[in-house]
Amino acid sequence: MQRIDFADLQVFLTVLRCRSFKLAAIELGLSSSAVSHAVRRLETRLGARLLNRTSRAVSSTALGMDLAERLAGGFDAISSALETINAPGRGRFGELRINVFADAAHLLITPALQAFSERCADVKLTIVIEDRPVDITAEGFDAGVRYGHLVPEDMIAVPLSGDQQWIIAASPDYLERRGTPYTLSDLAQHNCLQLLLGNNASFRWEFGKAENTVTMNVPGLISIKDTATTISAARAGLGLGYFLESRIEEELTQGTLVKVLGDFAAYGAPFHMYYSSRRHGHPALRELVNIIRQQNGLQSLPEL
Image 1: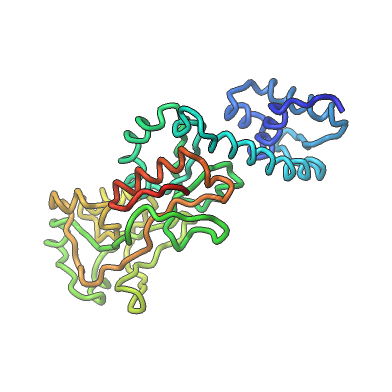
Image 2: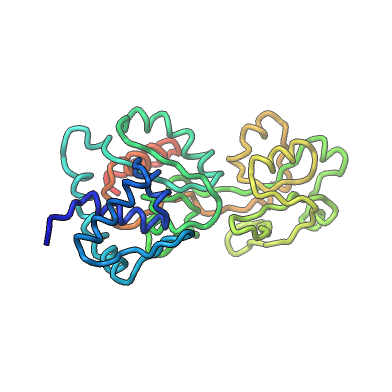
């Protein structure tokens, strides 16, 4: 068999993951024609078709899928060897792609970026912020951030924070006009800003702790999927909002939002960084995890 360029194999895997020659070209920093030539060259050397192409989609042939599965382990081993080798600049090596939901990006990632850029100056860091459920392995991410109870069972998870407290808050103007609720039954007389989850389902507000947790559907005419917009709506006096207390710390300090029903606050799971076992040796990921843990009062991890 003629010599096969490893770069062509990497291009093939990228096209298969992206399901698009164009998207693969963008990710690899190549032209679409260069990507197409690389795949064609690989197919010619193997004497077999690896990808089915149409005007709208790219899919794998059975042989292509088998090759991809066999290659994955080999490239992971090569990547792991390069990332864990004790060489100068080890902690600043490579590329890191993280998928994060919006509140975690605001509370954890943004405060850590300056320190990370100083310690890992040579790392190409990509942060994708989205609230929908994501299969990080299938979509090419090295790691993701979720609440602990939402991490897939086949992933390794490292806590980044302590437990998170969920509270109700409203503007002083709203409470003056509509009154302050003192019991959960009082919520029936209020406009509650509805919280939409990543899958667009409406979130039922939770109150209390552990076995005493109460879950309620609350009344309200406004539904919002974005936390920043919900905060703005609450500050504008449009209704009661349900928030992570840490997310509205500044508003509570400034008095633009006021905490109500504090005795009914709910405690949720900590934020976790999660990743497959194949990525456990990534030095830049370990550095980012430790920066975030330190900033949240947790001890650094010597190894992931």
